Length: 58
Image (cartoon, rainbow, N blue to C red; front, side, top):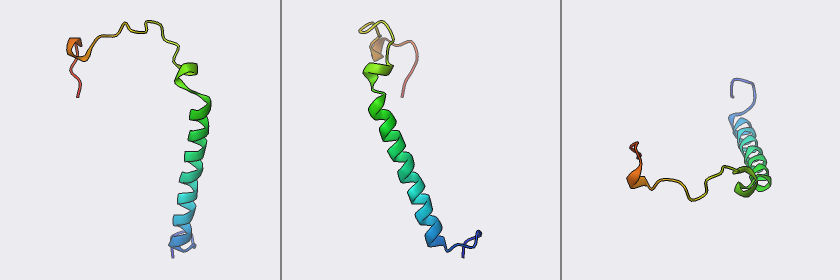
């Protein structure tokens, strides 16, 4: 038995259920918050190419 008195299999199912519910909430949020709605920064097309960047990237 697990520490809370429930069998480990029930706790594993509850954990999976929580993860699935979080994924559903995130999916719903992403559906309502697209880049077109959220990304309002000015300067489209005014970014530097990677080879001209001042900092190193991996």
